[in-house]
Image 1 (spheres, rainbow, N blue to C red):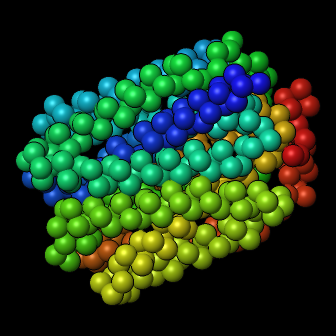
Image 2: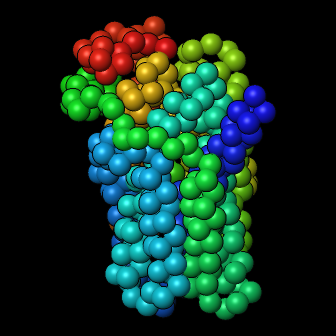
Image 3: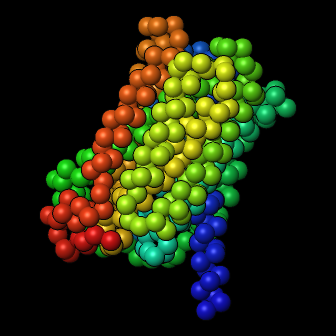
Length: 403
């Protein structure tokens, strides 16, 4: 019994270490945007590409997650992905051109895509009765890693005078996580999920609804991590000060991602009231950015952070809620992330285009407010009593049934 609990705690440490590596490569760029632009010639659209390319990869490779898990097994796939993240982050210590920066983002995004496609299903399989709170821990550390990247990169640059070191030193997080995952994750054979499970899920409107919802919400995240720091630097803020905004936002994201799924887990299967709360927080924060950005910026980033973090974690829980079978739950989670991240790759480019047209960021933040209203409407369809009916055509051999 003691060994069982020890292995469970070791698994939780691995959950935290892995989650910590999935966002620093994105959030570390914004505070250093002007320095990177001057050093590499990367324009505004190029900066948006640093998020667009990895999000595109996250979306595409998420669809391949179930097949990869079936062929190679979850543990080897996750460890390999962490090694790729480490390698891609280390490359940033040596880049000197705009396209080399985009290439490093692609390498890291490839590794992150593999983890995000496979790891939620592993959590569901290892701790099925605590999947909600553990997904909260995973989401909290994922978003907390964003806070670390946003704050560490400008501080390291100011201390050493090297923006390369500010970005490349984050590779140590990936190395540590790969070592922990190698020893902590359970050893298993290749997966046994049905080959047609993804095709059957794609035939259901519910899968597309979840993709659209996840994409609309995470489009707010990708827009903020790319353009929030530059928008405040245009108002006269320094790199470290604008990085502090992102760090505060990410800390609030992590706290909400940890707390809200645990609260929702205790109040029944209907996650919609909590989702609506997180969407309202986002709307209020983006309204502040759009209308009075200088009046209470830390309040606005806190609201956006609470909304984005809580909504991200609860969305993952909702996907897992649809099935009691881990293989099917993992496949649905992977599809939701796949389509969602493909959609979420576009908003930074839209905000960039609106900035070029209007000369400011208010139009981009208002566009995001509209996306939140659409997500609010889609949430109405996520009633738990409809889970089984929404996915009833998935074969029973693939693990149908509601929670």
